[in-house]
Amino acid sequence: MFGLFGNKKKKAKTSSRIGMTRNTAFNELVTELSQQSGSRYVFYFFEESRLHLKHQLEKENISIHGTSGSSEGVYLLNARKQNLTVLPLSAISKVYCIDHFPLYSVFEAFAASLYEANPSQTLIVYGGLDEPIFNVFGGNRIKDLMVKMGMQETEMIEHSMISKAIENAQEKIEKKVVLETSAQSSAEWFKQNLPQVL
Image (cartoon, rainbow, N blue to C red):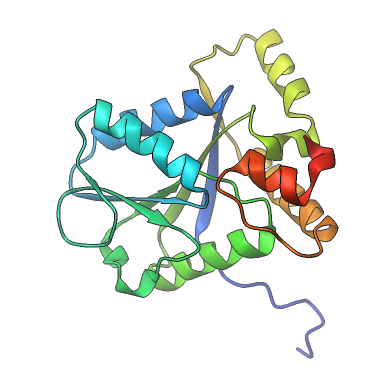
C-alpha cells in the first residue's frame, strides 16, 4: 500500500554452498552434476569461472553445452546474457551458479528471472572462502575459524546465515560502486571496481 513496505522482487530460493577454496566448491559441484542425469543448468557471471568449470567437467567426461537445448548434459550459461524464457526450466527443480556476483541488483535480477520461469526452483550458488567477495566480511578470518572448528579442506558449509551475509555484502558493495566496469573474473572485477577490497 502506497509503497510503504518496499516492493521487493520475488526471486528463486537461493542457497549458498561454500568451501574453503573455490577449487573445493567446483569439485563438489562436478561431483553433484555427475550423479544426476538429464539436463543440468549451471550459470556463471565471469568467463574465467566458465572456463575453469568446463575444464573440470571435461576431465570427468561430462557432456557440456553452451546454449540451451534438449540434449542430456550440463549447460554452461551466462547469467547476464541468457534469455531464461527460452529454457525448459519448469521441469527442473534445481539450477546452479558458480559465481556470487558482487552487485546485489544484478544477482537479484537473475534470481527474479529464475523465479518467473519456475517459482518452485532452487538456485544453488557454489563458492569458496578464497573468493574476493568474501574479503568484504573477513573471509580469511572465517576460514581460520572453520579450520579451528575442525572443518576439512574438502568439506562444504551451507546455511541461511551465510546466504544472508553474502547478500548483505553484495548490497554493501553496490553502495560503493558508482559505475561498474565489466571483467572476465571476480578478482579482475574487484580490481577494476573496488580495489580496496583486495
